[in-house]
Amino acid sequence: MLPPVLADPSRQDKKATMTTQANPDALIQSLDAAIKSLIDAQHLYLLVDPALHDPIATMAEAAALPKQSIPIQAIPPNRRPYLLALDSAARHEKVLNASLRLGLEEGLGAYDLPDGSPRSLCAWLVATPGQTLANLASALARRAVLSVPDVQTVSFRYWDPRVTAHLPRVLGEGEMSALLTEIGATAWWAYTPQANGALQLTSLGKNGPDRTGEQDAARRWVLDGPQWRALTALGWANRLVQLVPDWGLEAQPDHGTLERLANQALVWGLASESDVLRFAYFALTTHPHFDTHPRVRTALEAAKASEDTTFTEISQTWDESFIEELRKGKGQTHANVQ
Image (cartoon, rainbow, N blue to C red; front, side, top):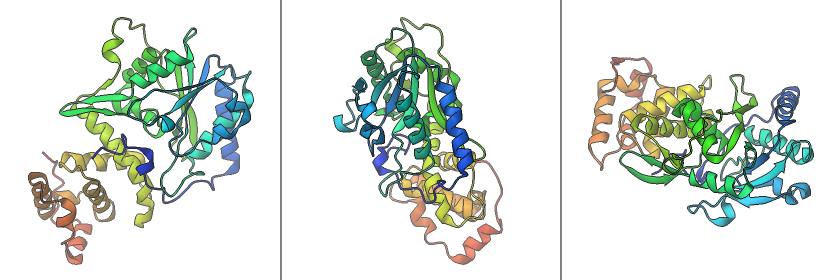
């Protein structure tokens, strides 16, 4: 099973709680700041993913703009992301402002659906002078392939802002710089979450030096083992963000905590959706070091050693007295997983 960071967005669950009741003044401030960030931009392109919905397509001014589908063969033509050429921000200010508003509202959950959480307004790209719409789309498509150790190449929805926002941290600043250089862009703007829960339009990465001659070899993301695990943990953390509000916790964990829990589950060899989510559930509802209890360690080791035994199945046999023991931290060693 592919981790959520790679999966089709239609498979993502609807968020349990939404932030659409945020302070209206704060929303206006976020939108104003976003508009000011791009007001002088030239060679501007909007990256849209219509997989779940496409609100910008109903805008007459947007429909009149040059459009180019991003030719990713693994995605059906009617669901492929596409580019709109805004040219200069001043020339198409109405479309730019509408896209920034819609992108902000999407990020806050205003358009969430029963079958997924759409993020159609993904990025605002500033291309290098002379870069064409068709060439930019082709370059973006070439980057939709990811290679990892011991895994066949897979499609990678790196343009989803829930993924892109974390790539500089997870994969390193150099990866985003390489991406910009290879697609012929100077800036990749996307909404990123802030510590206070707000969203802020942020420029991700900087265009690096010319890499002519390396382009053919660098058309896909090539990750080592630790990078692959970090990216997979990011995907599970994004999934947990949607589910954890239903778990009755006194306080909601931050994204970093969810990533650490997902990474710990992966270290134990858990890979299925049910096992990873079950591990996170116990860590958040009983004790953060529940997996160091001897009985739990035995269960995790058994699940890792056998394809016929899952952690979910074993943990379902635990009675309430044992779960209470976990909550109290009894029998736990806090030892690191080997």
